[in-house]
Image (tube, rainbow, N blue to C red):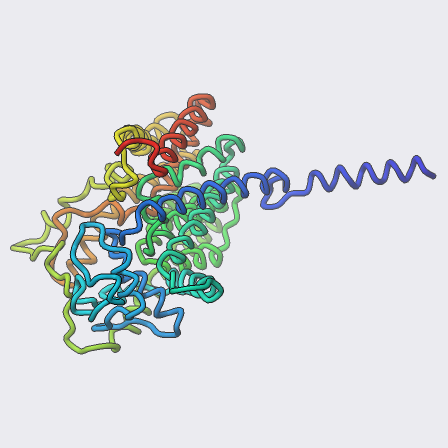
Amino acid sequence: MSQSTDTASTALAERHSRREVFGEPLRRLLALSFSFLLLSVAMVGTAVHRAPQLSVLDEATHADYAYEISQGHVPAKGSTIAPEILKEWSCHGTYNGYPVPPCASGGGAAAAYPGSGQNYNFGHPPLYYAVTGVIAELADAVLPGNSHFITLARMVGSLWLFAGMLVLYIALRRLGARWQLSAAGAILLPLCPQVLEASRAVTNDAAAGLSGALAVLILARILVQRKLGWIIPALVTGFCAATKVLNALPMLSLAGILVVVAVIAWRDDHRDEARKLALIVLGVLAATLVVFAGWSLFQSGRGLPGWKSPIAGLSDHPVVGAPIAELFGALFTGLQLLNAYSLAPQLNSTWYNMWVRVLAFLGAASPVILIAITKKRDVERWLAGAALIGMITYPVLVELQVYTSSGSYFPYVTPRYGMSMIPMLLACLVMVTERRRLDRSMLVGVVTGAAVSLTAVSGLLNS
């Protein structure tokens, strides 16, 4: 009787030790999740502490949006930034040293701030701001002393970053990468300068890493697990677009690849599969359109009639003649996706710049290499194709959006507009490493990059 009890206990313990979540052993997933969270909080927290000035990424307007929505209000045309955020703006200072009313005075009138203190970013969908604003407001309510809303909202960026790392890890595992390489790929996410800068600031770009990772996960769901339902891809697209419309770019790139896969399936007489893939594509397009058109329609009737943005003409120029050259002149900006960035000067260094250049080269080359070393119809080849579509098309999409809304164009499309494609590039890099069994090179590179990034962010490396 005792022996049978011991046997049953042993079997129960073995089943418990093999318990899985998302197809991963529970203990490993918990250990990695803790590691990802620790790294994201450490990097974002250190960056927030060392670079208190508001970011170049229009941080004041994004912080105000998050604050206003946490108070039950939604900015509209002509809305000015809340006095609480203006005061914190004065205390934080500006990235370029632009004069603002002194902190000791408790802030000043909105007109005394850059952009006349107007919130010109009201046109973005509200999901990122609602999540960030509510969490920051709840945390601020329990902390003693003056308001720390901007700092707390910045720290919420570490949670967006952690979520992106965890989802990217699970997606890479679904694509067939070993867990060590999948973890290394996830760790690369905060080592990308655009991702770190967006995560340490209050900006809806902070959700870009998670959006791109979700697209990789959906790609694996469709092409590896062969789950061809359209509802989940549509919901994921809607979620990404609701944080920022351009965050839906990886799902749109995936939709472009699925069109090709559907045509091949139809030619191979797999008509039912082709129809299901077509439904997924339509669902992705519809979800993006619903969010974009719905929010635009909601905001179009609110605020001051005839309002003009106070920053009109600063980054965009009017189109002269046919807009072909203007629209397609930035076609290959995506090749610099990992190289060009606006990291705060306090977080920069010579060694960090060297790391970024190496990572940028490998990231841009990885989709091409992956296509070269895979066979026709391999899932990795479709992944590489989706990454290339996103890299090449996002500058044109941005130019089209600017041209249709204002008749102008950007002489230079900032690579941060394509930030959501970064997880796909990292996934390509991991799958190249998996295919070529370059485990040691990958792990050494990630450890080196993490060491350089952490020391640069902490100030141990000279700027």
